[in-house]
Picture 1 (cartoon, rainbow, N blue to C red):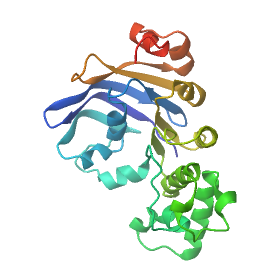
Picture 2 (cartoon, helix red, strand yellow):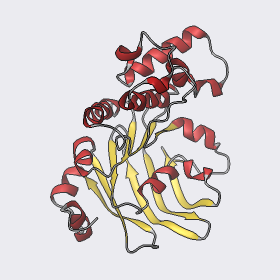
Picture 3 (cartoon, one colour):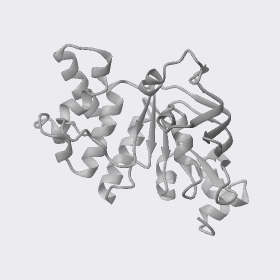
Picture 4 (spheres, rainbow, N blue to C red):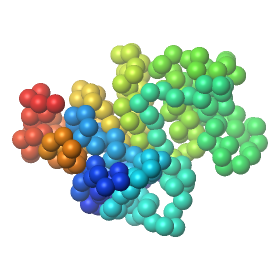
Length: 258
């Protein structure tokens, strides 16, 4: 079941450096929320705090709260591995495991949960690949390497891998930036379908993409180089693109800076 995310006064540090400051927002379940803003403003850094992926970087830490349906994902009793199972992630460049087959790529996360019957895995692989709109293209070559697929297919394979463990939230960090226009359209169509079952947050540099796929848009910016990124404005996507409340948002949307 898709879940809501509530962020309260979140600060993100790398060592002593404050990278993102004072972010508060609510991400609604079964919706697509887009993060936009210039390079270096903290969009991807903030995105990674939503499933504790930033913690793989030494010295990274947060202050503030991230609640998943009311549960603090940073509480000392919470296992980060379980957080990442519940809140899946798809990265900027397609990253299937190159030596693994298409089938093994999909079930990679499931194997961390212990052995499961082959029949059950077969069902999960088919369901995940159908969910990623990839089944019809690869069903007759599941034993072939995932790295042999096209870029767009590889990214959909990574989405299948993410949803195979049945998360409630999907984070996507510029999932189309390395793809051609046709593959990008396929991913955008897929995002629109997936939001019926998942809560989706996407970072994108492509404002047209944000306008096409998202229900709500958050604009991030930073005052100057070396200053922390901040959430400037968040609202329904139509409002952000037609009648933003902040001049900085309007300047970015209209191309006056960034």
